[in-house]
Every structure is written in C-alpha cells, then in structure tokens.
Image 1 (cartoon, rainbow, N blue to C red):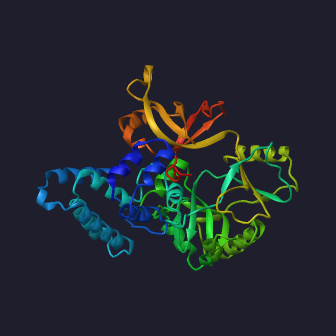
Image 2 (cartoon, one colour):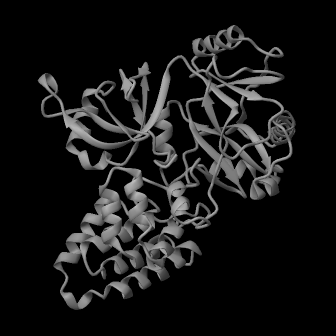
Image 3 (cartoon, rainbow, N blue to C red):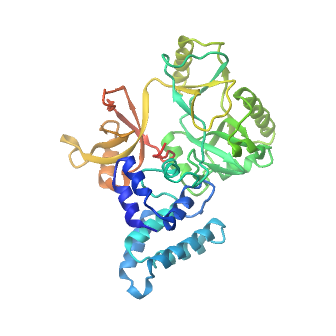
Length: 419
C-alpha cells in the first residue's frame, strides 16, 4: 500500500490534484480503497486516535526484529480485515489481533494508514464519488435520494405535491436488517430499532428516514456510539422495494410508496414499536403557489421544525439529488470541508477565531457561531477538525462564490466530503 501517495492526497486541497495523485496508485493500494469504499463491507471494529498514539509509542520502543517488511505487513492486515469482515474476529480477540498486527508495522505511517483502513475513514478529503471517477466500477455506491433547495424562480410545482416537516436528525437507511448512514456507513447504535422492525414485513423494503434524539448534537453523538442508545427514534418517510434498490430502477411513484409505508407501519404498530414512527404527511393544493409553500413553511418553523420538504407524488425514488424533492428553510445552508483554522483576536486570542472551509473549491472563513468552550476545544485540537464536514448557514454569496455572513452550525459526521 503506497502510503506516500496517500499522504500527498491528504495534504493537497484541490480535488483535481487529489484525483491525479489517486490515479497513480497501483492495485496493491486500490484493493484496500475498495474495502474502505464498499458500504456493505463492515469490520465491526475501530481504532481510535489514543490507541493509535499508544501503538506508535510501542512501535518506537520495539526492536527492529519484531517489525516486518512492508509487503508482508499489508498482507497480514488484509488477512485481519477478512477476519473482521466475516466476524471470525470480534470482541477482545479482535482487539488483541489488531494490536498485534499494527505493532508489526514497518514504520509510523504504515501504522496510521492501516488504522484508517480498519476505521473505513482515510481522511483524504474525498470519498467514494471521487474513487469512482478515478476507478469506475470500483464499488457499487451507496446512494440515497437527496433534495435541492427550493427556488421560487426556478421550481414551478405543477401537478400533485405533498409536504412533510423537515426533521433535524441524521439520515438512516435500513437494508436487510442493518442500518446505514446516507453514505453507507453502518450504524451500530440502533439495534433496538432493528429489533422492533424484525418480522414486521420490513425486510421486503429498504426504509429511508431520520433517526433522532432530543437535539441534533445529542443525536449525532449517540448514533456514532457502538452500543445501543434506546432513546433514539427512527422517523421513516419513504420505502423502496428491496429488489428495485439493488437494480437502481424504481417503478412506484412516491404516492404509491407512501401507501406501502402506511400499510407496513400500520401493521407494525400492532407489534408495539415505540422507537419507530412515520413522518407526518400532508397533501398540498394542486399546483401550489409560492404563497402556499411559504405559509406552510412558516407554520412548521413556528412549530419547532427546520422547515418543510416538498415531494412530487408522481416521481419515482431517485438515487441522486432531484428537483422532485425540495427543502424549504428560512435561510441558506451549505456543507463544506474544513481545510484550515485561524486564531482569534481580542478576547478570542489563544482560542479559535474560525475555520477555513472549502465550499465547492472556494474557501470561505467562518468565524461566527462558536461557543467559547468550542473555540477553546477546537483550538487545542486543531488537527482533529481538518478534513471534517461542517454545516454553515449564510445570507448570500459574493460574485466569486464566497459565503456572506457565514455562521457555523455544527460538524456533520454523517456527510461525505465527496458529496
């Protein structure tokens, strides 16, 4: 595995440069990238940063005789990954074998990159979409239907549309009894929800919705935990026939899928499913006006929601961003990748002043929206935020594409920097 080139990919900011570097990688590296990118390959094991640092120190203390050559080390890791994937290695045994293998790394870089492979998080600033651009067919991407922001001047809502409240949760898709994020990362903290869905007929469908706690930050932390968090509730808003999910060719429009979902969950509620709910659904007047839409949005915002989602009742499920699904908020928002940090001034000296955030190739400084404790924590751990996705709200854009009056909302661990 060529860690030198991967380190170069991590270091450069421009996506085109990352793509050119990735294209130089050989099969011995792409086989690991394939394991990382495939959403249906999971290892059920993670190596956190503290454990990596401990192993690095241990590596430095070991005599050279205990280390192995580069090729042998990567072959050893590949065998361990197979054991984790098949669950022949799990629990304490997995920890023991993983630590033993990582301790044989020929150098620090090899150990760090091996841990990232196990975590299925290479921190390259690009993800599956870029991998597929460089190596078409590398994996079958995990894709869900995504919304465009509603633009009254662009989107004319003709025909039959419905609206639903826009929830402030984390996207969760249930496939074959397992839960995944919108990017295909397995969620292991919702076993109680999956248990409630067992035997309810859900196995014939792929369920799409959001999992929520009391607040987004609470939800984000709970979902990322490995153990179950039984306060999380799954709010389902769509379903797709399982076989059509595989072929990526859906036949039923949203109106019919909604009827399937209502029937499925009505039957399921007889089984006592306190952690599964169906998102409220309201039919809009035919050919709704801009006034109809903004009036509905304001009512839902007053009720505590983020806004509304508009859904074309005659549209099939689309495995990409589509104008048949629109989100309506009272402000603009954008997701970008953190590429740098800067120190504050005045009372914020010695603390985080803000983040340098890359939005589609244009870097904007975002310095508002942080609590004092966040400024202290993020400044003390500057490297930990680099490469992470962040959600920012803003008023408008400058002619050169920078965000005006950008305000930090939160980090988005559920989103991929390639999307």
